[in-house]
Image 1 (cartoon, rainbow, N blue to C red):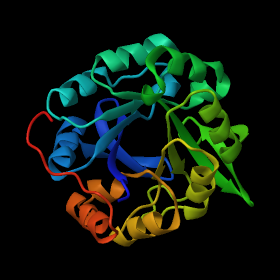
Image 2: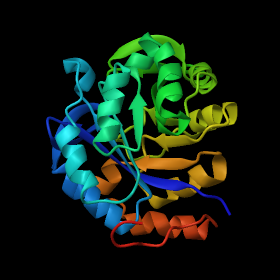
Image 3: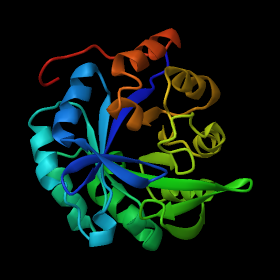
Length: 257
């Protein structure tokens, strides 16, 4: 039985849950800890928190949100944004994160991937890859899609795996927030190229999009943001798809596992 994780993604700016389209035009949604608790109770397998302005300001501002959420939910949490050195990752892990995601700093200093994996373990080292389609390839972007790196998404995924990363969160910028489906070609290309789990994101707006992901790729999970925040899909809708596609579905549990 296939195990595909449904992960609620919460993009946070200055303590507020926000959501945009193609990583622009942010709109406030609400309190991130409250939404996280709601999604956890509804059956999401994990949570991803991303501080969307952390790289701009040079620091992650999610510590208070993370502490509050950790006291209220009992599913694994990945946290990213503004992580530039081992100390930044250590702070987030001590505040309740199970995994730490890096993007900009990894592209600027790839040795940081090795250092994080050696210090905290591969299971806690996640690489966030934000990619945009350019011709027949996908190029890695940083700072929420603002800056080019010159890296190919598939080649970069292979490199970070070799450097010890334990998971990839893959977001297609060109489909993100559109609700018209994920870039399955991108997900397939990356997930076929590496052995570590790949979490696909960017574009899920209908339960059928999850079915297409399951049938068409080897992704290990899906991250969902806007469709959940605006009520276009529910967690139960997505869990129903998992059941219909023969995937395992965890039982709902109240309180600590």
